[in-house]
Length: 137
Length: 52
Image 1: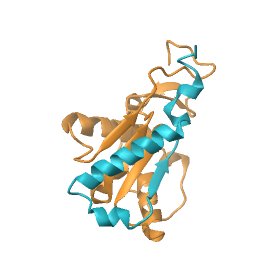
Image 2: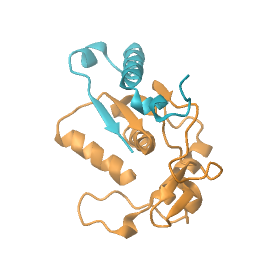
Image 3: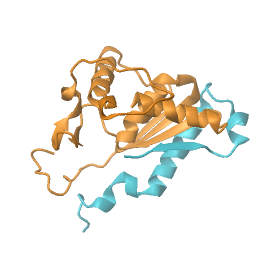
Image 4: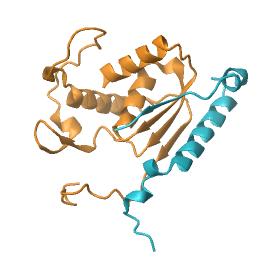
């Protein structure tokens, strides 16, 4: 996720898209724009989160082939700095560690989003995806 | 009566709702000290989306 935030920032710089920015993140993109705002705070003046994923959410893990609570997968491994070059590999999947990091950061800092306008759009009821038992979802 | 759990009730399926939210956030940012009004009003709105 940090790598994605980094690459998005590099893309905007390369495309000469200056701030100020209002970022809109849907689903897991909600986490991404929160990371972006934390990493590049001067650029971001507002956030809109559309049914955002929280770091404690359950997501389907392709590797484990099951629904998991993301941050509980963390093994306290270090999250490497984003890389500008070089091939990626399956070993680069640090998502759980990053979510754990986000969770711990939020727990120690009650206002991690900063002083900027924020709107969260969320459905009242999230139906379970097809094939997923309600109690697990 | 519409099923409240139906997929078409999800915010992501309502672009008008999202557009209104963006407008609200932009207006709030303009009213803060973080953004100079001429900075935003002189450019097209630029929105970065990050979808699932």
